[in-house]
Image 1 (tube, rainbow, N blue to C red):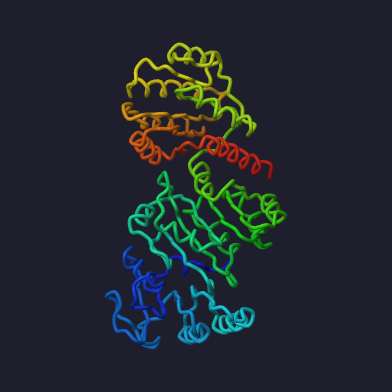
Image 2: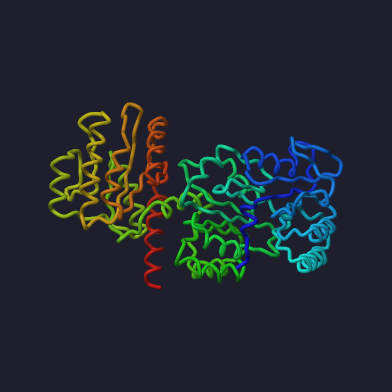
Length: 449
């Protein structure tokens, strides 16, 4: 496996050709590193400047006090000449984030580039890439702005999602994107052209990365090397992918290799929550708790489509739910439809969810639980009740769906659910149910292997 660590957490970095003009790509890379308080040594080269953003600007490689771990080229001209100079200086890792100009003979350019890198033992990324974001180690080479508070919020995570994209814009956007829940992100990678290091190499790296639990891929093309390495990784870490290319046969190969297709781009992250936070399901029998038959029927309809079944609780569980919950609860104790509640009071509603959730999850006939939540501002529902429930039944998935919930009530639920690592979907009934099915199928396939 190629050593890619210098691209993710170098102790020193050199940006070649930093512009003094704000909002240029090279300026933005340096600005990002300064704003996130990158702890390594940061060197910049511009022969026409003495200082940029408060940093000393060196005029040549010979002036540098050391050989940096990583060099980033952002210039659009003289790339090969600069690479030769970097090789002579002793640089071993280079990121080429320059876009090749129209009219350049790509074949001839890459042949010369590879000859230089082979001559000096250089490992390179690119060209034509946006960069990498490593939230864990507080490092980025992104040419798109990243936000300090986003970087900081992901720094302390122990397990998260890592994202590889064959799109610079979609990869770079994760430097400022705030999802519905605080989804922990470990690393974001834009591959660029990937002539020397490609998606397969990055997957090998993420396989060994302890902070990466789930991998998501945005793909335009699917290579043989990608398919082969996916076969190796999927028994250990789930890989979700969304393919926008026309090669349906290659997509089938990726699925056969064990990768999990999602329905659209945003599901690379929304479905990832389920894989990240939910335990392995024991089966397909689900309990449902909700305040209205309409929301429950939406869930049940998608369950039929996904070949999931309504759990049939034992007689003891049925008796507890029918006697203590009230409402129009199903005669079998599941689904739990508690409409109309006695009062629109948070304590009362919490009691209903606490009793029914505990009863269903304690039942051996129930494999997982889906919560339909339709709160309005007056119901001060404390989602924190699920902390103990989750601790008591850690081996059964819990998934929540906010159905037309008022904004302030939603915020409270989302904040607490994120802390408890319970996935929440806002008006996405089908996605939540399908996510459970994908989770079950993934673990079922692993066991067969």
